[in-house]
Image 1 (spheres, rainbow, N blue to C red):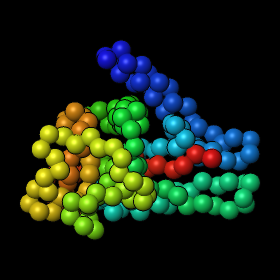
Image 2: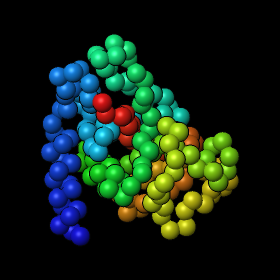
Image 3: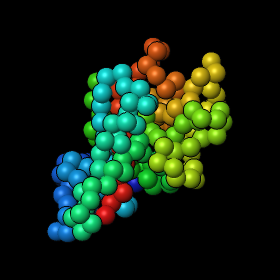
Image 4: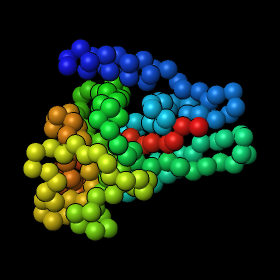
Length: 179
C-alpha cells in the first residue's frame, strides 16, 4: 500500500512539473493543467475563498478546440467518480499545496439546494464518496459544501460554504474534460 502511494506521488509530481500542452489538433488540456483519465485538473489557491467563488473561478476556464472553432466553457469544481481519481487528486494536492499550511480544498459537491441531496456542480451523478467518520453532519445546520485536507486523512467533510468561520478554505481543484 505504501509503495502504491509512493508511485502515485511520484507520478503526480512528474505530471505537475510538466506543463501539459494541446495536441496538434488544438484540443487537449490547456497549459498549466494536469491530465488524468480523460480530464484536466488545476489546483488553485486563494486566501479565504468561498465555495461559490471557487466554482465561479473554475467556470471561467474553457478549452479552445480548433476543430469546432468555438470556445467551450466547461470548467467546474472537480467531481470525483472513483477511488483512483481521488487518489490522483490527493497526490495533486500534496505536491502543489503550500507545505507550511494544511489547507482545506473545495471540491464540487454540495447540498445547497436541498439538505441531504448531494450534487456535483458539473451535474454529473454522485457515484463515489469518501466521507470522514461522522460526516456529513451539517454541524450547526449550515454545512452544505465539501472539502478535504491532509489533517482529516484526505476524507471529505461538509463545511460552511462561506468564510465566516475560524477554519478557512484556501484551495480548490478545477476540472475540465479532455478533448
